[in-house]
Image 1 (cartoon, rainbow, N blue to C red):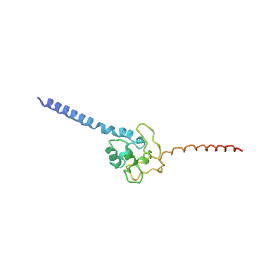
Image 2 (image 1 turned 180 degrees about the horizontal axis):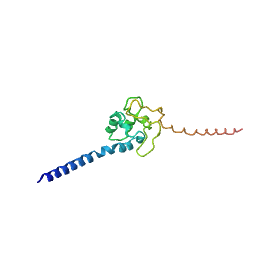
Image 3 (image 1 turned 90 degrees about the horizontal axis):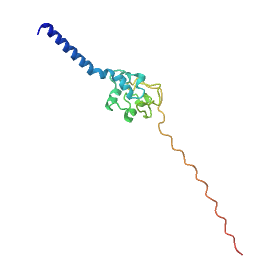
Image 4 (image 1 turned 90 degrees about the vertical axis):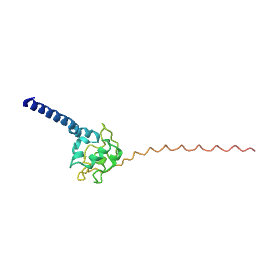
Length: 150
């Protein structure tokens, strides 16, 4: 083959290899917006939730749960700031499920940055106690004494 044909084949291979590498990296380019749906209020701080200051401990904790919002991940404090991941993301009682609205959608902080904390305090997450049973009716009066005979 001639020099022109060799250059064309090399360029074609270069384009093919570049395209394959780009496609292989495509899931990572889309990952930020996709992962935002895996945690409560993930869209509020966007990619900063897991990448605010480099690769955060919260990012790796989420990775360890296979991107599942678990009770353990919710109750953990990935950045060591004294606030649970759930409190920082608006799900302090760890009840959020994908596709639902978290308990809070304001004052959301970054669970991977100790310098970012919510102003909210932990609410009581205990379920309401069941209502007390109705009081028992009073006992019936005693029967009258039998009549006396004379």
